[in-house]
Image 1 (cartoon, rainbow, N blue to C red):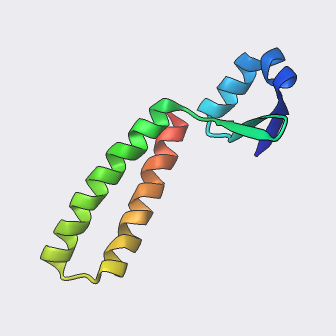
Image 2 (image 1 turned 60 degrees about the horizontal axis):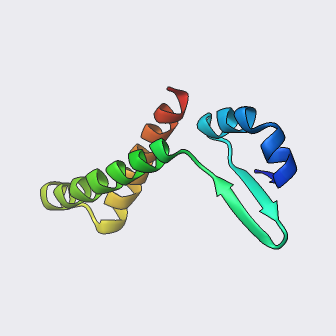
Image 3 (image 1 turned 30 degrees about the horizontal axis):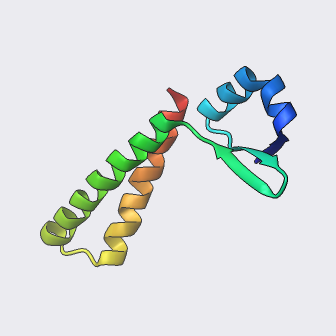
Length: 89
């Protein structure tokens, strides 16, 4: 994770935004406060995946008789694969 000063962030904003869109975590510090830049598109994708994951978990538990831990582990694997695919787009 890269942490920048406000001056560094302003000077190279287009490049920093490209890096955030590529999946890198960028923080900007000012005084004692720190903010993090992140893609709203990725946040929306995470919310959609989370909702779909809950539904899928319920179906897995009902139909496959998996334990909650087994189903959650499986969905976490799927979630990671989808996020990796989103980052590469």
